[in-house]
Structure formats: structure tokens, C-alpha cells
View 1 (spheres, rainbow, N blue to C red):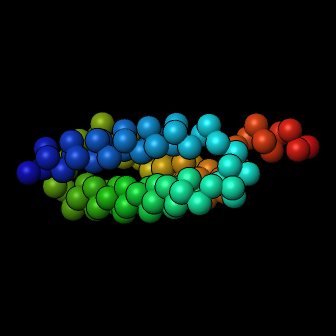
View 2 (cartoon, one colour):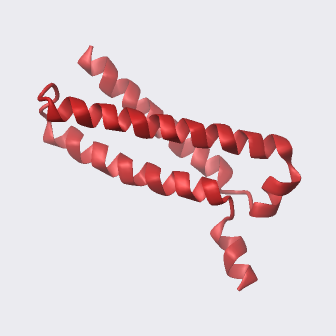
Length: 103
């Protein structure tokens, strides 16, 4: 069961990176002009929060001594910071290219 939890976690994390790549091509005005794209962005933000909650669950398993691997701990912390960055970039929905051009 523990192996299934870890495999499911890494699959969720990798899928979220593909979602981020999909949304990185759009600018802020694309989200304003397209309701369906904005809806997809909201669903992706909810998905990212789910992965963050699952990260907290995995971390709690590590603190309780169920998972004792240092490699998993390091990957959980890296994925936590990655998903915090991905979620904030999706919440603001403006790519860096667009912000740099406006300055």
C-alpha cells in the first residue's frame, strides 16, 4: 500500500508539471478573453492545491515513521516548493514575457 501511495504521488506531481507547461504559453489577456481557458486555469489551481494537500499527507507519514527514506523526504520538499511556485504563477495568470514587455 505504501508503494502505491508514493507512485500515485509522483504521478500527480509529474502531471501537474505538464499542466504548468500547457498554461505557460498563455498571457494574462488570453485568460480574460477566454472563459473556457480561465475555467481550465481554475481547475488546474484546484488540482495544485490537491497535490499540496497530498504532499502534506506524505510528510505526515514521514513524521510518524511510516516512510523512513531520506530520498523521498528530499523529493517531497522539492515538489512542495515547485508546486508553491506553480500555483502562484497560475493564480496571477500573467506570463513573465508579458510583464517584461509592459515595463
